[in-house]
Image 1 (cartoon, helix red, strand yellow):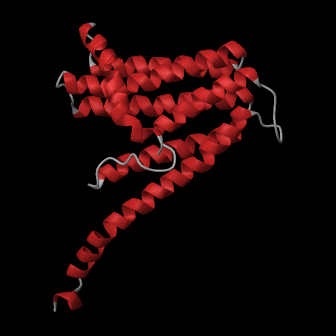
Image 2 (cartoon, helix red, strand yellow; image 1 turned 135 degrees about the horizontal axis):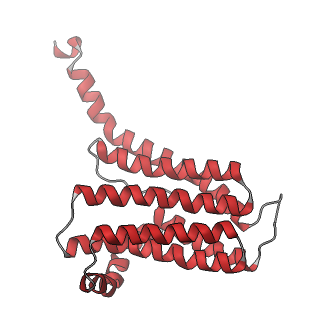
Image 3 (tube, one colour; image 1 turned 90 degrees about the vertical axis):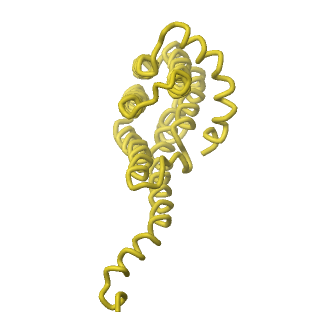
Amino acid sequence: MTLERLRPVAERLLRPSVSAADSLGLTPDRVSVIAFGFAALAAVGLVVASTAGYVAAAGLVFLNGWCDLIDGALARRQEAASGAGDLLDHVLDRYADVLIIVGLAVGVGQYALGLAAVTGVLMTSYLGTQIQAVGLGREYGGILGRADRLALVGVVSVIAAVFPDPLVAGLGVVGFLLVIFAVVGHLTALQRFWGARADLWPTIAITTLSHNPLWVK
């Protein structure tokens, strides 16, 4: 992932926003809900698919991503990190992802591409949490992560506002973005799967051999 490597830089830039949220009395959970609200409004702009709608969606997607960073940093500042808050954050992020991709697909009438894109994105996120569930830690690696997706949605929304017409094979820039999400999303999920499998394989092999009677002898 490209933007995930910039997380330390983003966290330094976040400090004024985190301080402002803290002074306003916001909790991490409330920031997570606000982030989801921005995503829902962005989806509306993407469905409208007008110049104003795309420009508004670009800004709202940025705000969603920014708030998604603030809630974690705010939880650390307030020493309020909890399993319940982490669960809420992940659930709202997944719903936000779905709304944004559905908005992109509905806005340009590309429903099949939208289905392929949303399953790729959800499988990428699922693999990240499932890898954590088997004891390897939360996985953010891969070709395309959430920060990258949001950045692409923002950039493409601005381009679509200026160049709304189809480019090739009846697809405009939004349609090509859905293709990227569909293909790269599933590739990222597979990349995470094979990476985790490689880490787990020695453990699996040792466990299997230790239960093999011939090995015990």
